[in-house]
Length: 164
Image (cartoon, rainbow, N blue to C red; front, side, top):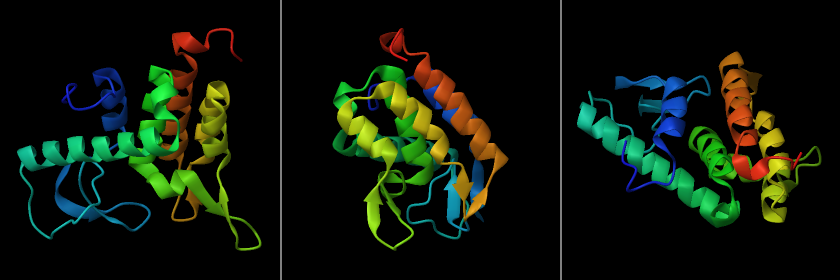
């Protein structure tokens, strides 16, 4: 864990890591995406990866998720635990997946999570983390557990005391 490269605390990284397998050979996640290491899906090759490569991917993926939050979710203004919870869902679902959805008429719409972040409604952001519990069109208990844990983490930020 490289705290000098990322804003996400070691405590939050450990929470994230708890929900990710650490595999040295590629595997398909429940959504059918080829994955390596600890949830890394970028340019996965069919070979064994070293622990160093897996660690580097972890940091690169965290940096990418944090950039998403900073660029699209008012990250600089977000309280620390809110930022970390948003980073987790971006790491896990992807920036586009937490920013947009397709409505019943087939039109792209912004997510409520995105709207709340734009408004600085941080308690609302925490509450909406649980919108992202499906993978491959199916509700997964592991994602339910992950989102509930990060929702509690998010709402426990000292900056949100009395904000609900």
